[in-house]
Amino acid sequence: MGEVIRFVSKSERERARLIEEARAIYDSIFPPADPASEGQDKPAIGRAFIGRDGGNLS
Image (cartoon, rainbow, N blue to C red; front, side):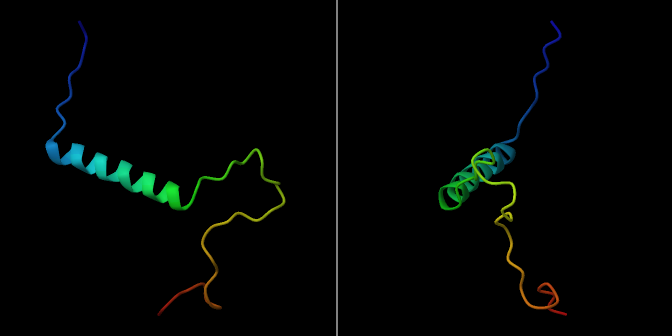
């Protein structure tokens, strides 16, 4: 008793599958960094600074 069954639509299952697949592809291209093995004084690898205004195109 007390068990809750949640309906999950086919489109929601497909969306979750696509997100999982995209994450796997992203991780295969950009492997997640191991914070324990990196030095704390190193800058994080992330978005590059673009231009003087930070990439603002307006």
